[in-house]
Length: 301
Image (cartoon, rainbow, N blue to C red):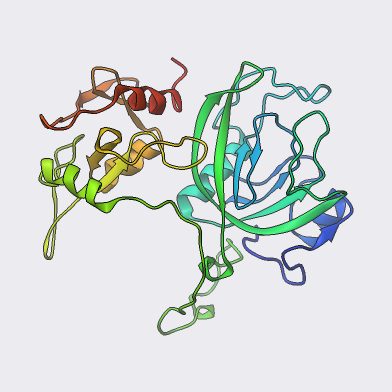
């Protein structure tokens, strides 16, 4: 059966369900036990949020969701480190990289852990579509390394993903301009002037590879926060927490493929080897506390 992304016909946001089997039959979630539906190849199409992991945090439109693996099924406690290659975790990463929407189903919360004001009083409830914005590792409450995913609620107008991932004819897609919708979305406000200042120090040259991208009208680079903004990282929007990167190294940095040492060597996470020294302008006072925080999100050291 092909994995379906997006809303399922006949089940609008707010639809209640008595149990996991009803969810499976309706096509909202493929698993009767696991919290993550999907796989590493196609992505995660749905998750169940029910307080199963003590490190979870539910803020309504933002969810900090703890990944799959390493939990004792009898006690609910974490007994080993989680791995990003665990099937459910890899599925959520694929959804993040591909921009695929994830159905969020909230269930009545596990009494062993904190209660969420957004959980239903009984059974399960389909609460709409979210996007996986970022992921990172942390030392969990039980003393083992866990992977966490930040999911942000999507407005209906933001969703434009084909529902079936199996091959289909291109003829099914509409010809013409993309539709336009109006929606109100809560976003973190970034100060564009701060990024402009940092980029100007480097003349838009990437601090990792030195590349400056020439486009019609000038040079292009991206401002990359070392410690992420917003929950749960709460990094500051200041030059000391910002790098000037090319798009390629920005994606690598945000996803932990490269990280920085305290002496600002650039490390390749896949090989464990240093790939060079970060380029640093004399006016750029990088805060090593944010460097250490970013590194801790991706390494066990």
